[in-house]
Image 1 (cartoon, rainbow, N blue to C red):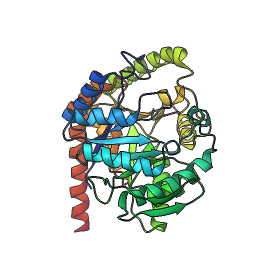
Image 2 (image 1 turned 30 degrees about the horizontal axis):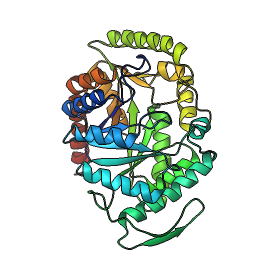
Image 3 (image 1 turned 60 degrees about the vertical axis):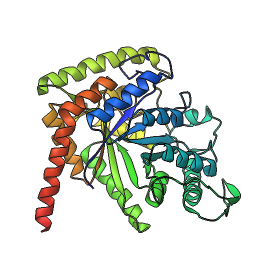
Length: 363
């Protein structure tokens, strides 16, 4: 598998450094944002999930119908839609988008966030529910006959879906979560396991754990890592740009502190805080300034340098076996355009060079 470049789109202009602009469901912005990623050469775009924001299914549909080639990755939290209905909704959306849809399953790393939608299960119970949800989801996607299921969280009789996904046997399943409970589910179900941008050593350790868990189920698994690249013509200019971003984010954080709250139950957030504890600069290019500000609450670590330097840093993760790289900026749409011009071609060229070198060694 060659390198896959992922981006992320939102439903209106907003970031750690930019207060929300425009209507909460900004149709023109969604269209332009999706098209900018497609024109920049991204392979897929992630559409996130929040308990108080527009429905991701509809954002994904609009983004997909505004583009023709780029893949869509829809984040979904089990527990609020029955798995049989979720399977039909996802299969229908995949048909609408001509087989360009993938599913990112997130069980939820914040009790308070889950409770906003009425979910009062604890952390490990949520992952147990996700395990069962994915069992039923796959059965619904693939079964040619009605089936029964009786489990701890779900019970169905004679369940069947007449609509199947365009992709066979079903949509790719991306999975997030760094706890022991999450890794058990990932090893059983995930096609692609998604990591936030940690140090190389932390990443290596987590990749090995997930790979071993998947092997226990007789499965191979792919990996994705997420960063917020900050690039400029010179290294000094890039670090100066990072400091400006941090200054603006601090000012916004003072206003939006409840929105940028910590996630005490999230192991992924705890791991990012451990990365922050290593210092503001880790492994040469890894910058933890924003991650420290938001308490590791989301994908917030950056790689800082010239496009060449940042591409080299990303290839260090590629050398760990990670073939999916998610990049998004602090000026979201404009950065996506810049990445397409300055960074993505370098990543692809360096990954191809690595593949050629590795093939020669095997020969």
